Length: 301
Image 1 (tube, rainbow, N blue to C red):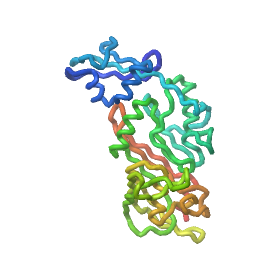
Image 2 (tube, rainbow, N blue to C red):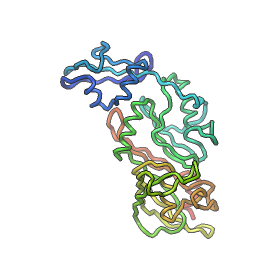
Image 3 (cartoon, rainbow, N blue to C red):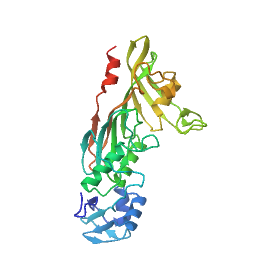
Image 4 (cartoon, rainbow, N blue to C red):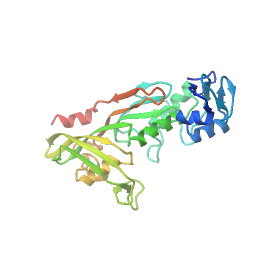
């Protein structure tokens, strides 16, 4: 819900007498968000009257949280560009990203990214928010990306990810024939010494878990490979790519982690399905993306 100022606004009906601070906490509004509301131009209203978090609300009261306008970061230049939007509402946007397009600006891809185009879309539509990427994909990984339209929505979805309530399924093609029908890779991931990009399995790294299922075995131009379905339980940088290298089956096309580009000119990785509870309604949402043409060709061998 939005007010006439177009700022993101939420309304709640109080069920029982409680401090406003406690009521808002129960609705998933963080202390950080409340601080931003207080100091950055937002408002807390009870029955259309501004109140502090120490106010006591009673059953039947209407609580309105008007969030402050968000300013795009200095390094994010709004641009016009094509976005394959599968779903959009007042809280979230689901994008189907092609391989070769960055999610956020970087040294190698300062422009033309999903974030640049979303910032341009927000500017054109007068959405008073910056871009909040909930699920990010590497430049050469294709598939689904979830974007929040507000820092509060981003917070709620991040909590779902932390609680493993956010389902992320990838289809990948790995070198060699994987024997196991199902496998679990539970290995910590950290930055490789001397590299700002590459990650490795290392015992002092962050906990990471990837569950896999073998879908099929293939052979093309003398190369043997396996299609796999992979579920992320954590979201470490390059997690699937590092875990599959550790398993001894790097992704086809992933030359950074030991794969060959003989069959495809990028890592053969596609985010095919995401599922989560809508951060405002609680409704279960599931989105799917078909394999792009370059990866479909691998299944036709």
